[in-house]
Length: 193
Image 1 (cartoon, rainbow, N blue to C red):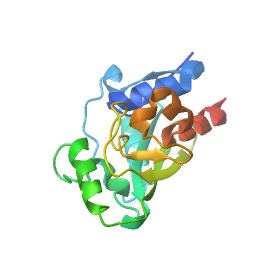
Image 2: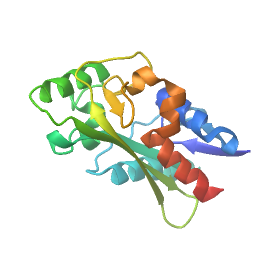
Image 3: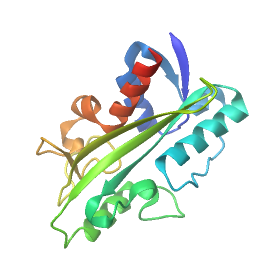
């Protein structure tokens, strides 16, 4: 089995990637290869941030790897929080999903259009001469209240199209069959198969 480095220390993302990719490859996180540096995501696009992470890890370790950048884009908010999704409520401080969700609910309070989509862009770096990108999206809407205990981030607020429950209520099996990250990872899997 191939061993692939996923340029993340986010355990939620690691679990999802392992479930989605299955026996395609053994996925290892940064701490397994003794990489502990903070990587600043300074780009203004998902592609740019994914490239920064993947290239930084490859340049410092020599391990071909893949990195993702993901976010929630809300139509009524002109695409925000977008690339700032993780630090939406606290741009300089640590990631706080609870504050992010509360800020989103507050900003949508007077909005009737609650359409939104999640996006993931994966950058595979070091596998060929140029980086390779894979984009996945899932469309839906933002609920009026938090609901469900599974998942992470905006999962308690995001209701995917065709469902009446949030990702946090639907659980990992259903989410991983259709999510933005699943779509991008499956494209990568197909490309390298």
